[in-house]
Image 1: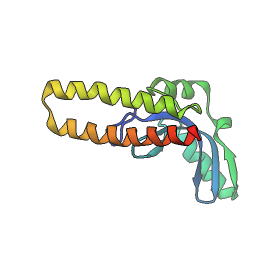
Image 2: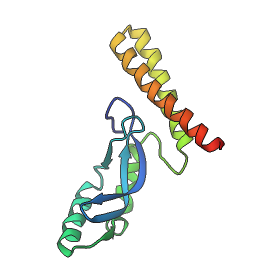
Image 3: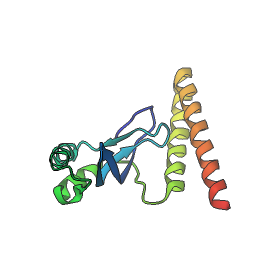
Length: 138
């Protein structure tokens, strides 16, 4: 599982732009709080090799799926707590639930700094959840 700003990163398969090349079907980790995105370490080497070839050939689009195997996908899925599968509401709910669980631990430990960080994270997640609900209600 990856962490960036303190939130658990979520697994997703997406498209990344590197220069003028689009790379499709990339196993990613992304943060729903700060929006950091990274290629999962299980496929990072293949991603970098494909990028070298694509940039050398001046390819506009490539597909990473052709260069990764099932064991790499299994490793990626094993380290993710949740996956974005076209359901942003469930991902936001999971992240809010995890932050609330951690808030209980922080309070038990009387760690005020951690509590402040968790409150800030909950504020961001709550705002995103409200925006999502408002957008889908229309």
